[in-house]
Image (cartoon, rainbow, N blue to C red; front, top):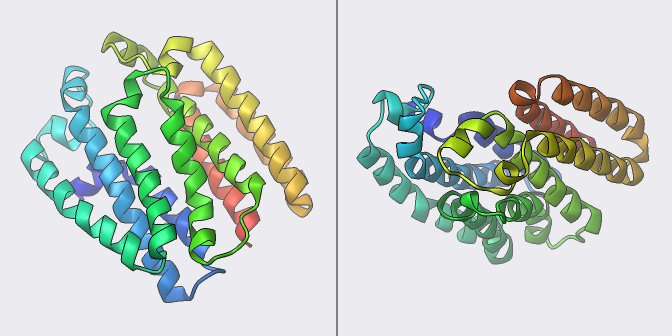
Length: 255
């Protein structure tokens, strides 16, 4: 369980669930589960490298929710399991149901997550890895199944990635600045970040509503409720609300 806590388990589980939902109508039950496992190994890489890179910063901020900070895990142990997970992720991606094309796209998304941890997090380009990784997620199973890829799905994933990035940073914005982190959300400030989150959420809702007319009223209602909650308590509610809306959006598309 301590390794799961270090993986940012909530978002990891959510992305894995989304991957299964995207795959369930394209592949057999066993293949969809294997695809979900593949995505899971990639998310573990992203989460574990994040905790490894941020260890000193988390220590200074006394982030007690982090297993490395409280001593439940050692840096060496987390580094070893990360190195074990890497070849497993590559093998499942390229030689599993995703095939070479889908597997390569999945690895691109994982690579973006890891690149964010090691480099982009502290630059004005910080939203780019999120946009690419989230855009890859819904279209990876489609490419693997050699299906047509709707353009709107690619852009919707990218927009959601950017929103997730800004929403995730809001809760730690001040402490990030104190640690010298200068990603785009830190540079713009909390008020602008909140405006971007709500604005892009509105654009995303319009895109989804136009493409899925049957669920449009529910999408508008959920997004409006989410926007109100985010505006009311941005630091505490922004990221979980965005993730909940992501799940609802995928359910609307997948079923």
